[in-house]
View 1 (spheres, helix red, strand yellow):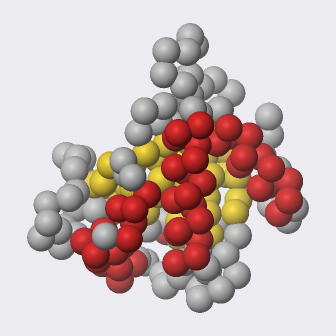
View 2 (cartoon, rainbow, N blue to C red; view 1 turned 30 degrees about the vertical axis):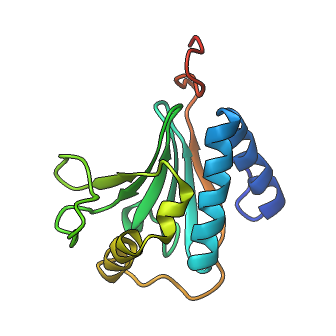
Length: 160
């Protein structure tokens, strides 16, 4: 599968749905709900979609450059992570951030309602404040950046 033409929003939306449908209905429903919340909260953000070997990743940033993504949803067969790029040094008085990498940190999104928790909203706001470029107020779009030819199974217990 090749990425849809970025100018064809209907084809891109359909392609992203195919990626999401590969997961269990529970994970897929959570991804769709999280995207809805983030798109409504950040209408100018560009969604950068990577159907990678290990996970489906949907980054949010001001434009097409991956290096400018502020955070992403990393979707695995059993979990969805709200991954902050960079997350190291974000103010986290509630101790929600996990991970030990040199740059990123994440919150396990076991329930989409976490996106409405004040501590998570504060993390998102702090990450946006640190962004290289401000997100535009409107005009967000979705771009499929890459699709890996080989991928790990998207459902628990599925053979590769």
